Length: 334
Image 1 (tube, rainbow, N blue to C red):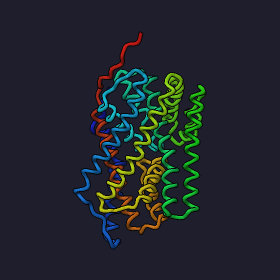
Image 2 (cartoon, rainbow, N blue to C red; image 1 turned 135 degrees about the vertical axis):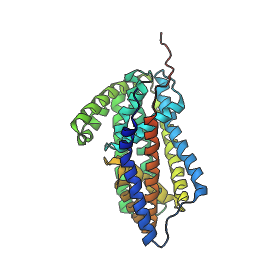
Image 3 (tube, rainbow, N blue to C red; image 1 turned 60 degrees about the vertical axis):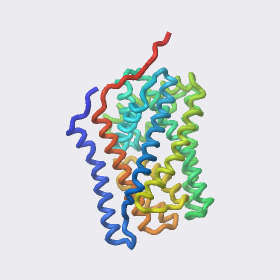
Image 4 (cartoon, rainbow, N blue to C red; image 1 turned 180 degrees about the vertical axis):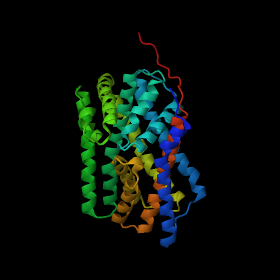
């Protein structure tokens, strides 16, 4: 496949760099106005990076679990690169991170995996990610309520929304098991926010993925429970990763607020805004305010997460810019 030119990569990186600039402005504002200025604890950074890399690898492990059911045996390192590339584009395209999934499918297809299988694996992998999110969200909110953080009414409202998300996943899963369209009706309306040329093309990929998803679930009914376990492990590791990130910025955040912050990151990424600019920061400040934390803490958390988001995007763009055809072992079938 053709790799991106330096000019194309630089253009794609502009929103990420804008996010980094916004984080810098917030940092300077916090230093000038807050009694406790944000700072970086360098000795804590390696642990955070290790946690971040472990989370990315687990995403690739779950995707590989799906692909092996399809007869493909990709290298784990290759899938890590493709996942990062797809997530970077998904963050930059205002689609609630869905815009990166056709990129993943295309890159995987250039490695020799049949297009239908590539699209189906991406669709199911994303569905499993959403399943983990929708299971973890009520647990995060419930844990925060049990530990006495924030307004009970507001938290119960958030829990209700999280349960709606879980119901949506159940709806998709049941329809796919029954051989009925599941992804197309679910994403048809959200895709309308994209330019017509985009949503038409993305819609075609989603329709193709819908059929592959139905076939995959019919052939491997045990796949979802196994991969869902990996999704829940990812959600648990996310909490550790965020705790490490906050420690790298000199923050000791109580577990209930870490749970709320984790929920807020998911909400911000679901908003169709490029690189979640503004949505990520506003969500974190709002949640920490509801949780009773000082404004300075919420601002520092927002800065930390913006820096982490920028790192994810820039690494993903680097993976996309250097993408080359890899070798995927697809065994012959009799």
